[in-house]
Image 1 (cartoon, rainbow, N blue to C red):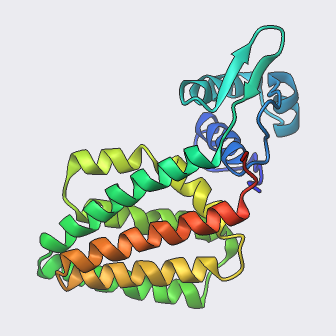
Image 2 (cartoon, one colour):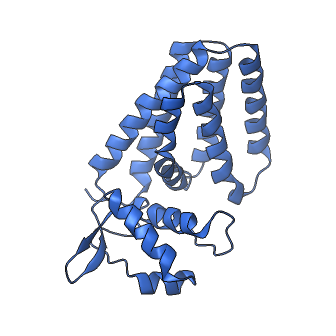
Length: 221
C-alpha cells in the first residue's frame, strides 16, 4: 500500500494526487468508497486545497466521480480496464525499445552498458525507499532512447499507472529483481542494435508485469 509522507520532496499537490491515485489503482480504495475532503485532509495533515485539486484530476481521468448527495466516490477499476492499460503499454514500450535499437550508435551503446552496470549495482545494494525512483529513472532512459518526442510524451502520460503497477507488483517477493533483470536484457538488446529482440523483450516484460499485478492487486471482477 502506498504510504503517506507529509515530508515528501515533490510539490504537495502532485504528491497528494499520486498518493490518492496509487491507493485507487492498488485497490485500497474500493469502488463506491467516498473520498471526503475534510477526512482526507485530516488524515494527511494538510489543507483541503490540494485534496480538492487532486480529486478534480482524478475525476477527469475517470477514476472517481461526483454523485448527488454522496459527493466524490471511487469509480470501478475492473480487470478489463487494467488489462487495456497494460496492452497499450506493451505496444508503446515495445515500439520505444525497437526504435531505440534501430537508432543506437556508439554513444547509446555505451550509455546502455552504463545503465546495465547501475542496475546490477542497485540490485546488490539499495534501500526500499529508492526502488520507485530508480525504476522510473530506468523507464525514462528507455523512453528517451527511442528519440521520438511524440512517443515519449505518450509514455510519460502513463507514468502514474506505471508507478502504481510497479508499486503493487514489487510487493511480490522477487518481482523487483525479476523486473530489473528484464530491463537488463532489454538494454543489452538495444545496445547490440537488435530491434526485434528489444521489442519482444519489452512486450514480454509488460506481460509479466501484468500477470503479477493481476495476481496481487485487489480489483473488481
